[in-house]
Image 1 (spheres, rainbow, N blue to C red):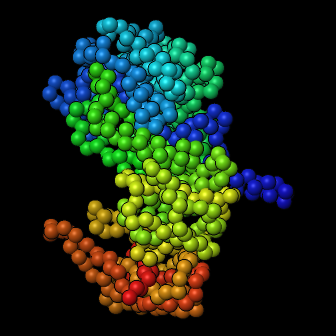
Image 2 (image 1 turned 135 degrees about the horizontal axis):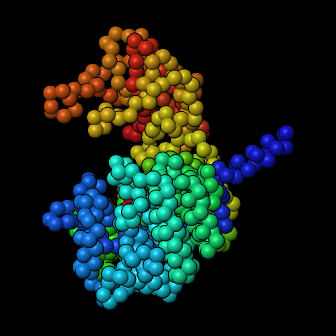
Image 3 (image 1 turned 60 degrees about the horizontal axis):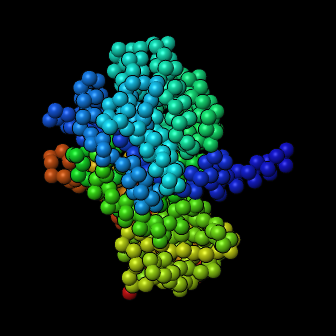
Length: 601
Ligand code: JFZ
């Protein structure tokens, strides 16, 4: 029994440390991290507008225009006349992906409109029949991918198809169809089309399905999904399958990676492969209405943020009806590619590090065991003004080296290390305008102290429930309200004890502040802060009300910071900080944080 427990413990601890629930097939995927998504089809010719009206529905998804604006098939197909069939050149998409540092491409072979952008024998509703000269975009793209050594995957809308009378569209919730009819669609369109895609275009790296509900909430049966999955495994055993097939990674380990919601970035580390599909602006298919483009910096942060949680990013382009890609996208893609050329080691082949993911306020950490056998901890610095010293809390080994990476050279930085605390001296000017990178070198994967709270910029420690080492007692989590003018807080109705662990890197004196909302004028409620042998009592102060916005009913409870006292940390080392809140249900306290800040003269 003990032996089994030990084995379980070993397996479990390996799992929490690295991204290792990755099957053989998906090794390339977790290594490559960054891919291109292409939404291109008949809808690209509508550009998000139909007969003078923009696409209905606030998400502005231009590829939904047929359904949203209730366009008949006979009219919709006329969009094919707007295309410049001679000009469209999928090789340019591949070259753009290369330039951006993307390692794979996934294209909408068939989106919800049911229109196949290849020469499909299984359905007349395909590009070959409606282009002049006749085109098979999947063929051209697959050849270009082969030529440029780019992996190719297909998006295929298996559940929703607005063209086939027996397939699903949202209106089937009113005009229902039966499972038998759905199976006709499945057997005569989905299966044969998938067979074509898997047979005629060489090696396919992934099929990206797009059913964002679990199959038991839809008309698609598990048997149908298994039929589809088996078809893929039979023809292309190495092809990846995403969770929008309609089966979760948990219930079927043959599903290779999990797809998050659209533009939904990671928040937690997962040990299995996962991916965010993301747009540069809003729509997936080309929309001429687009005018809010994410910045290069913001996209790089999303990519690094996902990698720091073991995830991938697949970034979309929506080419137009002549195949060209909007300038705003091309510009950002070349800037991202330029960044990756110099700093890509913190993305490709990198993974989550063992510290808490949002530990530091200057940016995010990724990790890699590199080709030279060294272990790299990458500090991706998002803060454009991080201070003269960069503090890294939590790594319990001294690095061999610290380098600031720049396009010209690798600059060796001076640093100072003590137990768990690394102070790196930064140059006055950081080399990169988007994200700066420091590479730490270790001989072994460095061990960490997971429970510490990092020392923040301006020498503070921000102590919240979420970064505590432990807590005891009851509380209610309140989300932020009224546009965030009432901040998120935890409500205590009796008592709560929270403890944190910090490392103090030099003898120093700190202020202790706390923020809360308390609405009673007279009470015996109080909080106690214990640090070392010292204890500080703070009776709750009435915080009163404030006006959020100048409208009559916008009077809100005030969350206010009060000073609890000052503390001397005479010795360098670890300290425990304990907060006890004592109150009663008649006197609830809404508490936010403690803030310790070094006093400098
Ligand atoms: C789907 C499609 O409907 C859309 O047109 C586009 O192709 C996108 C990539 O995927 O849209 C979704 C799918 C899932 C969610 C939201 C929109 N989701 O899970 O939040």
